[in-house]
Length: 460
Image (tube, rainbow, N blue to C red; front, side, top):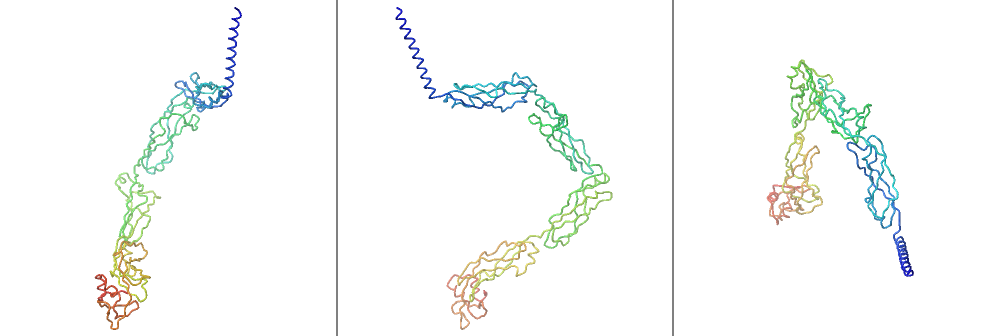
């Protein structure tokens, strides 16, 4: 009976030994294919549990904790910082006392074991969140203009509400805005950023604190004193510019002056006139000091100088000129007919310049250089003096030029043309029929060419 029992026990022992050996072999094989490795990972730290009415004063909000992880290579290769959460619990931190709080890290990736954390703690300081109303003061620089009175400055708002840690807010004493008057002559309003000062009179930073406004509106009332007033300057002139010119503008610099006198007399005065300025025959702009024509009992400051600017310019207009074109470059022994005989030129410019132009100043030319016998359409060229004149139009834009060689005749009468005409060649002489008539007799004739060949027009 004992022998069979031993056989069962031996069988069980052999099975367990074989199973353990198989597990051992499997683990060794697994470790060979997927070995245990170490990896370092950085995870951001979050602050949680901040008590009500407190603020975190000390403690880097960008704190990073470094983790050392151990586990199979296949697991560590898939691990990211998002698989871990690092937190600092502030719920038990007392306000006003710097405290070291442990960093708690929790992972969500099975198989990755955290073997080391650095840093393990972080120092934090909490303070009570408080609100304070800080008064605003104004620093006025400069003065108002002479003859004016400055009123009491108005501030909006007169106090600024500041919220933040008790240690910083409690140090604030007042805020100040600075305004420059610069000889103001009327009520001045500006929006000015305030500067804060602590209880020691030093500039205090409010970065990170909450303000109910970032600007203060400052209004400084300014009024004219009794017996003083700003009056516009009226420039008086006589005469007219030279013919062909016009008066463009008249202005005073400054446009107004401060006058002083009895209040009733000052109030009746609408403007201050200058003594007359003569512009008779002027052709250009000029500037000169003005003399004020002040009523009796009214005075101005001795250093108030008024300059008068008078602008005069030529009258711009158009003018029309009819000119006979001059041929340039006509070959030796050739003659030409120009149709039409004259060109209409419209010029634009100053009237005095246009009125002074003489016949030779407006010249119309036709360039026929290198052209042989034949009929051509040529654009006229207009030459005018360079005195601000603009050529507005040329009519016609192109003229017909017929060029031909002269033909001699023993009797003085053209035998080759059905029309007879008197001709003047390029070198002079008369009594010959124009060869141009022969050249064009078989073609289409215009009225002007017909007149030419009947002796009423001659072209050189």
